[in-house]
Image (cartoon, rainbow over all chains, first blue to last red; front, side):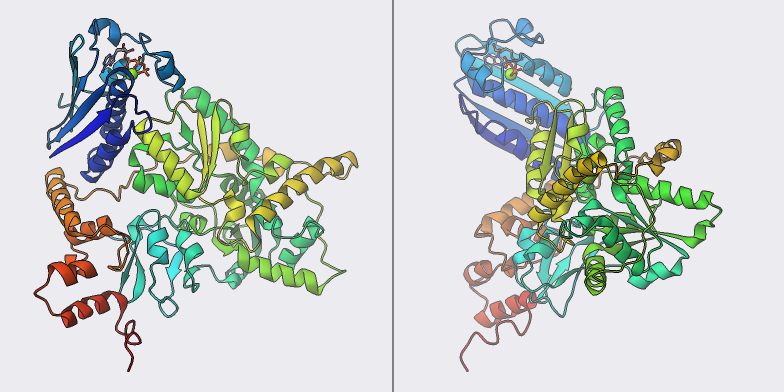
Length: 141
Length: 452
Ligand SMILES: Nc1ncnc2c1ncn2[C@@H]1O[C@H](COP(=O)(O)OP(=O)(O)OP(=O)(O)O)[C@@H](O)[C@H]1O
Ligand SMILES: [Mg+2]
């Protein structure tokens, strides 16, 4: 099953819409509640990163009985040093983003913690692709 | 699934006119109309009572134990919540209210909130010992506990694993009597309940094997009894033994904020079931921010707004706040008698205060099997596409998505939607359409619609 959501840069009001929708779907599919929660958290962080740091993006979710795949592709500045960005507390968030309550530099590490496989590719001034894979049976990873 | 869930809310068939108020008010979509009557889907209902509030003909009743059941016991203990006192005007002394209760047949009256001090310490200690569990959600309100079980299964681990003060009060009082060599079987402990959820919780407890109560008496029933006794005997009333009083913070425990204000860290108090749902959604999505403790009560104004309250919820809270203030005045005048009985049994109460794991039981899953659930979801998506999306509830389900789900689960037909029946199923005759609608809304529903 495939789902797709558009994400607008700067639109903090709608941020979280995609992850909340997917959470409902996964609950209906009888996925382990603990896994649903991990996916919801990591999707939300990825969504907010597009809103906070990029211009626009698309979130594609592909669900099959073995794994949930979330692909977030954005058009934006890209991440120059991914290893550095992954560090807890590292953030380049603007004052405006901080005013919205984001920018603690915890998003990427939260995503890492809550997905089985996190894959990030980025091209400067083009955009970023975040791929998150979570297996439906804990231990299958 | 067999219905192991006891429900205190009952629909009176003879009274129900089969309108759509309750089905659209239910936060768990537990109601449908069939055969012209509202029907309850047992495993979905959390006994919050929202249906009862909106029913225009009073067809939804709260089941109760026959009052005379208390007479089965030689010692008849009423565990009474402070909101019961709040039913009465402030110029009616607490002792007078209790005397009315004794006159009605109880032998002992003990306030439900005496255990709250012990509970506060337990919760604060639990928070300190479990820094990884955040936020901890109060398990005080049984409708909230059930709501989390069925709609937010991923959050059951956040529920605090302790019984409510009323249970602790019952446990300690029972202990006190049995210590006086009174056989256990002669002691009947009854909770005076302001809500339906507590009745269900006593009859089929969540997270505990047995309930410390022998039965439940509805607060509005007792209120009318006691009120008439008080009115009848303006001057003389039976003697109530000198007894300990509730502390002001205990008096206010069941009101909004009564719990959260004693808990360390960042806390929020949320009342009203739709507000609770909004917060639980955000919590599940990870967008709530950092909180240590959430007090959540299903009723607006917490227990003061319980469906079995006879007095307006704003008045009940105001009266209780005023009575709490009175405590300090009485204390200044040396009129306070305060040897807390429960502190004598503190260790025993603490040993019996824990709840077992609270199990999730999702009502959202379409099938146990994920592959089948995916197939069903695709079908639901497809059927939803045919439906008009106006959520009129004329099909007997609370909305178009619910109907699509019912169709896929074999509980309804797409043509239960009048618009589908008329428009899409063009081949069928209008009398066929009329027959479908009569199956949902009853044979007699439409007979007056056409002039003779
Ligand atoms: N989609 C993206 N496009 C461009 N830069 C990004 C993107 N996602 C993350 N970054 C960069 O990586 C840094 C760290 O991201 P992370 O999500 O960990 O923290 P944050 O978004 O700054 O703060 P928080 O997530 O705690 O609100 C960001 O400050 C930003 O510089
Ligand atoms: Mg971020």
